Image (spheres, rainbow, N blue to C red):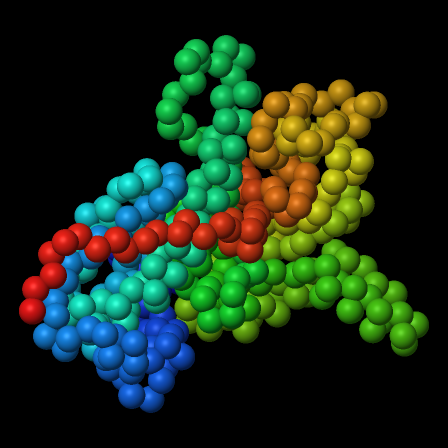
Length: 368
């Protein structure tokens, strides 16, 4: 199965758009904005703008951020059948500053007016996600510096954590998942599973539902046995494309210890879900170092190293670790016993993203 995280951004977008879902999204946008009459359905433009008028407009950022979404422009223009050309000035994934023009539209003035809101909404939304992701990635990177015995002074402008990545979730707007996950990649994050079909993730609801079902008939529930059976069934049922991974969510240290004692039960990743500071364990062979957000305090009796000055939680365990949750920070963390890697998993860049609000000011270049 293709690993999206190994692709450069242009290739990634082509792969995500290949099945036509992104195009169908913009077909809906076309219908909702212009109705049954098509590109000439803008009654205001028809009444005010001559059909022969042509213009040039720049897409300009109003704030600092990371650009994402310009890759959708060719699809939008094609779906809208707009007599408009676009010249990209900044590539997706690049940092931008207020006043920077990231693209230039030229063509029919009526058609530019018809497509601009859909294009600006897309760029604003996805750039907000990319910018939020970049903040998370930077917070994790700073934890790598905090781990050093002698941190550099001054701090480097760009640094990545050697063994910890930021992953996205399925908490996306319905129909927009491919675009929002693309935006996470633009911000330096990594894509987790695309949907329910390409990876196994045994979550707390699966466990609670099975436990309740067995209790109703008086049968015992054993987590490790249930997980082993599920892993075996998933691997037997996987088609020729295979599975991206097999992952298990645990929300207690007891469950984590049970899985560890059973040798991992065949899972490749363990997800430590919603573990708040009071649940942090004392140092053990599993957890060797934790970092916490500035809004949280480590348990007084726990002697593990913390970095209370960090802006967000980060994983820094040598093999296993977790991060605390917060309303605008991490939701959970995953650990890979096979690779020795960790990942902070957060939906925050997506569902807490602030629109970057690009605009399309009009240079004085109108012709008829």
